[in-house]
Image (cartoon, rainbow, N blue to C red; front, side, top):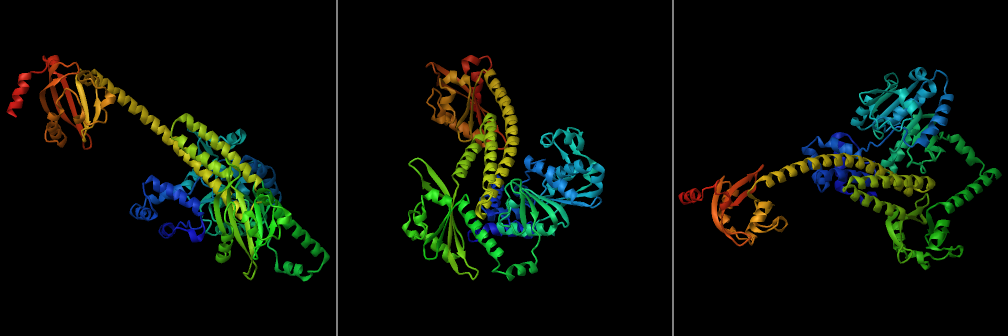
Length: 631
């Protein structure tokens, strides 16, 4: 969502949160942020941002629920085990070797959530140094903006499920089993310091040897990421390390950090280039070595453009096609002879989408124009979905050079989204379907992880897409845990309701009297088997119908007034005898008793009816008729 497309009402809500509670979410990605806020609003049946802001003003306790929804605390011990193996086997030993024997080692876990990764670092460092040296030399600072998560982290208490990913040797060595819970060793716990810290507003912790911030940057927009990374750069010592999450690659910030192990997202700090060094480079522009280096750099740039996995073309301001990479040639069947041709003469200019008007719009607005989910028909049955970005290319004096157009194939993501929607629907059915959906999500996670590894050299827009997918994945994991809890509660309530229904059916069957229950609108909700035998209508034929619409041998119209009096509460008990014809065509006298049915409010009435001849020993017809005459 660009700045021009921001919802003013949502932006007002963010300003209110910052002014009233000090939480600044304006640097977060709008798509993720709006999705999380909407989730909380739906739970309250609130439809727009203005109403939700009014709700926050009236109910201040809602802030905590909102922040817990926005701040997704999805973490684990040794999360992404291959990356932690590299940290344990290479990074931490190198870090220790580069320090003097008595020199302090400072580590920062930024966005620590409930503390699992901070304690993972503590275990690995203690394993290398030994417990005694660890306590003397190591300080691990673990920070987050979520106070509830920090309180949980400070307790250092975890469930059996939480510690399953810890190797048995480390779990037995560094955790104590107390009351069905696993507690981290207190003597080592003192070296892990937890505190609230806002990456945007608070000063960074300095003089660090290792900074771990995993799957935290991906929630912020590109501008905010740049500000945070500049602070990370300041916080780290020379030759220090930065360890990020699997969706965070820093492709646009190579001036601050250089990848040491891009697959595992481990980076080193780039030393600041001095002004003297830059002047020395500029002093001999005609030097042969410099010329050769420049030529290699140009060739390297061209090869990098040609081999990028995203289809991309470049058009100059005269409307001439000047560059086409390999993916674009394959995707749109372009050939070297098409270079230098007018773009408007190519089929690509108007299919799968009209690009000429969008190019003019990019020139006019001087900003990228983005189209998502553009449909391209490959065959009669197969559709390809593309994200198209038209980016104006400007010289340093802001004059236009042309445009770059990239085509990102998102068909796979569209299919994944459809699969996830179907999985969400299946989660609401049965436990068996829930298990199947979890397996599908695990497969999806593996596919997304594989996709991220394949797209390590993509542009900034693809980087943003990868981060968005990782965010949705963590939301789904959080939602799965919530649904499992809700499902257990629903199973328990269903069992209780079944017991209640069985008891009610047993009671109704044990009564040798016809029982009819109607609601306040005269519609039948209970019709027991004695009534079926009396009037010849089955339960499924009358449920939900008005009692006055029944065509039976009972003169139901004569009951309208007594039933209304019962529903209004004017009479608590009424009884009468009516002449009727039963289902066998025999004339009978039917005894009826009417009583109101109360709950929190009037819910309906209960009609008890029976053939007088069958219960003559219990009911005196003459007594009832006398009472009717007296009334």
